[in-house]
Length: 322
Ligand code: NAD
Image 1 (tube, rainbow, N blue to C red):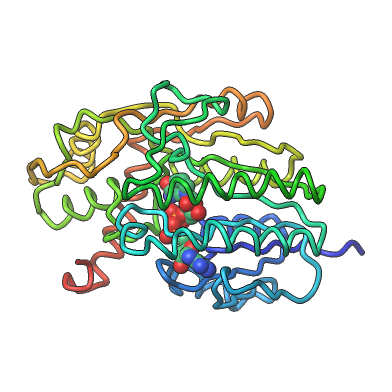
Image 2: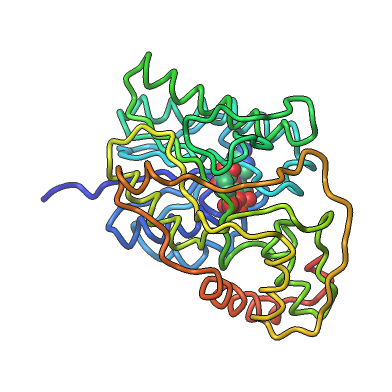
């Protein structure tokens, strides 16, 4: 009988990682989730612990990755991801993108495994081209506060390409655009969880600046489908994965108010430094190479996300959410 394929997911107890672990298990992979729980939650994977195909290793990917047994795929998702997280952990963010990525690549090299890097639309910085194709080199401020995240991911991409060219490792780079859904932390500072939490608690929704900056939001199930297709393909990337439907941040706030039925209003707050003005993926490559495109529209995705937040906000006292 053929051996079950085995995947290591760094950052597997985070928002995207927890969804990915579930998808891989459902596709008959054995999964090792490696996470230091800096922004991830044991709750995200605790139900999986009873499966004999799932293993949780609490470890920091920057201090080396020792995983016994064969490994077929390494999905490197460990990194603070929300601006709130990476601005409070700037050095850790640089370390996990650099040393952490090299360690994860070494794990792939030792096992001759496929390596999939969770990169980001932030490598495009504040883009001067909209929508952004993979061929656009970006407009990043390396010395601004967000530089720690953007440059760490750019270093990680360069590392993956170096391992591909020098060590013949089967690498893939996925540039993920803003993704939302159940299991985001209500306090993580990103627009969707912030607006949903505020709307459900009857607080005003805090929109940065005039709210006319745009985002393109992808529902997590669509994204995970795209990543899974990348895992099974031999596409090196970089490949953009995201939803090309663009809307302004103030329209997003209005939509959250509408779908929650909240009586909350909208208040302006200052816009963070180097906040991108526009953000929209060109997904032509994903369409042709993977046959992938998002299927879940914003209202449907918001409904599932809001239902999950309702259940989980109820379960916790308000003090824990701030
Ligand atoms: P998240 O914060 O929920 O998950 C990140 C996980 O990595 C957490 O569980 C955290 O504890 C873990 N981690 C951080 N540093 C670590 C370290 N040194 N060692 C081991 N584990 C560590 O964030 P997310 O939204 O799930 O993002 C996952 C990945 O996808 C990140 O690499 C992020 O940059 C990338 N990404 C996400 C989005 C998005 O919209 N969610 C967009 C672009 C890129």
